[in-house]
Image (cartoon, rainbow, N blue to C red; front, side, top):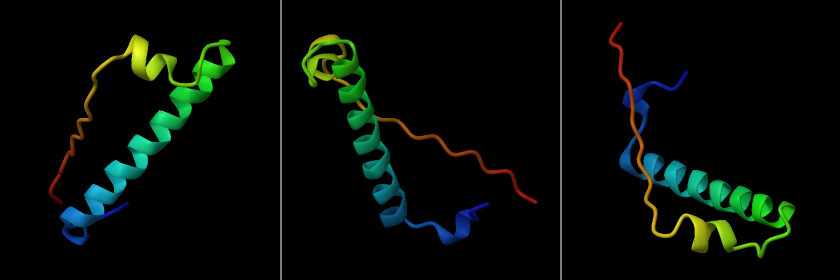
Length: 60
């Protein structure tokens, strides 16, 4: 378990960047597995998209 007090903005930013990269790679793989161009789902089906992160904090 990661304690919230040990996280800083840079850590959270790095995490978000890494997760976004992973998701885009997965979307490319899914597109290719369907016989579509690798950027089809990202560009044609999803269009413009953003990223949202939510944290839950439960004090001891």
